[in-house]
Image (tube, rainbow, N blue to C red; front, side, top):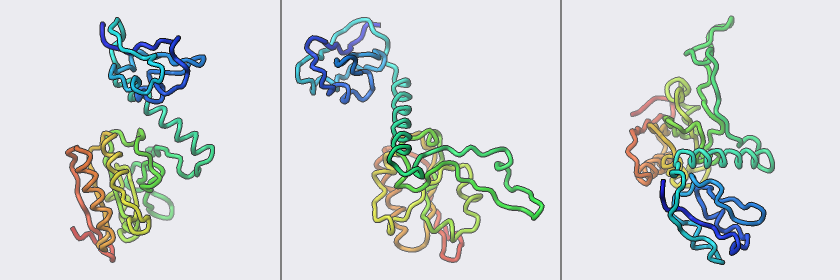
Length: 242
């Protein structure tokens, strides 16, 4: 197809790499010290790479080129993000913050596991990590996910947390008082950048848990999405209040 796409004059290019960093789609690589459009189907023709070029090596042109492939671009971004996070965790980051999707075997998908000693509950945690501060804003386990955003104390106050709330959901936990942080921005990114199907907030009846509820409410509003959501409040003696 004939469409608008960027053109890089290699003779003018000084190899600074500004355009490669500016290209959000990853269409430009540095090859032998020069910027090169290596993925024409990743170039959207918007020209984010143009303004920063100090030598004027980048211009627009209309020519035969593959159609812009938004799906391929998003998949490439996701893979790059995952590689960067895994590399960071393996190198200098805390190994415990390396994210993973937890695949439950067939036995664990049953409501209970029968043992000689009786019946025991099974874990319903579907990903790691689960702490809001440690979780990435984009990850495969968010695709089509139902989010459970829970105050830390709820899992200890409410006895059947795994079966009643965590089962089938991606669990995010936090304490706005102890973490001393507003989760709004991070939750907004998670909701905005991923295909989230619903949000359930489980909080304690204590006032400080209101910070978690407000962060979720603000994040849902700021995301611009209309997603089903609910608030569940747990009493200090472990009862569901509403």
